[in-house]
Length: 126
Image (cartoon, rainbow, N blue to C red; front, side, top):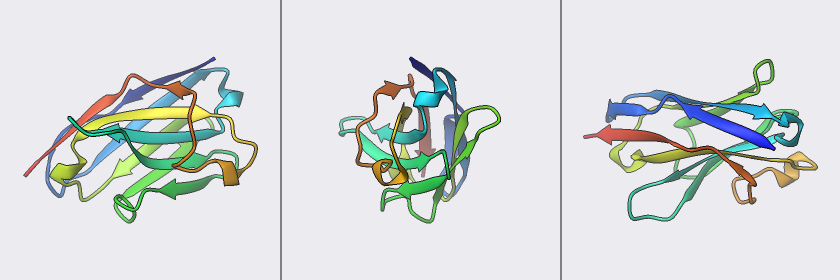
């Protein structure tokens, strides 16, 4: 079983930046595909970014391309989400997810993930 722990959320003004972290523990060999999702109040969950940690190869939702960067540090099994140019529409609970993918082609923002963290809140004020 993979355990995920997010951190780094907070409040920021529009145009600001935040970096989220997600540390994986347990059977981390099962977590070579990691992703970030978000759910705004009253809205459905939205995929933000994913990364195939073996290479690594990222994938982004159109809404965050050019503003968010996902990265992975294999020395501590941690995935990061650097968020720049934040806007009020980015306000949401952000969740980290993990799963095992057979190749990078199967590690995209549209796949299903089996392990989830508890989430960290990001609030962007105008």
